[in-house]
Length: 217
Image 1 (cartoon, rainbow, N blue to C red):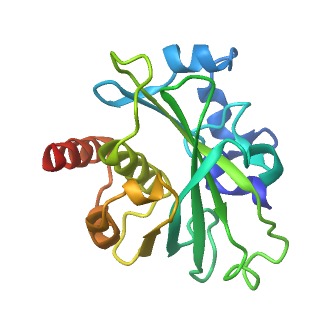
Image 2: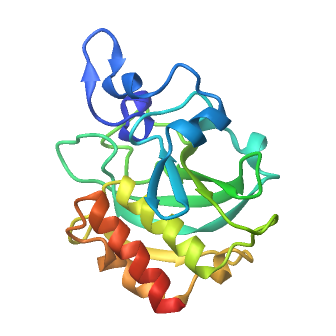
């Protein structure tokens, strides 16, 4: 059941062959090839790969023991569960973690959607840490530093890919007490609930990301 979730290649399925999105990926799914030939430049110098679009071999389900030394918690998100097409809407909490993938300027986003709120809808659901988003930020700096703008852009892209673009899709975002979590602004906590409402295209997302940068420049 969990493999049918949209975070593992979208909702579209070809009968007998699996997720339709598998055909979108190149044969060479190495990190370097995907970053150069597949990643989408959402705004200048910001390239993303999302498992909601198609899932590369290195993305997917992980266990905490595998990633715990390499990630930091950004926060918790309370939201509508959109990964499966359910008869009744379920509200869940998803914890969000950030690390790096091989390079200093390639960031890996892992999410863990907690089972509370899903027991009645998906009885066989089990929790895992799912690698769902990757961002390459090109910079002249050899060791680029994360800042508030970059972190908040990563989160906005994540929420967009999760399909949380409707009124009341997001109930609450609470930043963590880690050093990365505290870099996220208090203003972001309060405005995130409505920031993505009706944001139904990549072009609209790009405009929001650029505006986020201009506001804090």
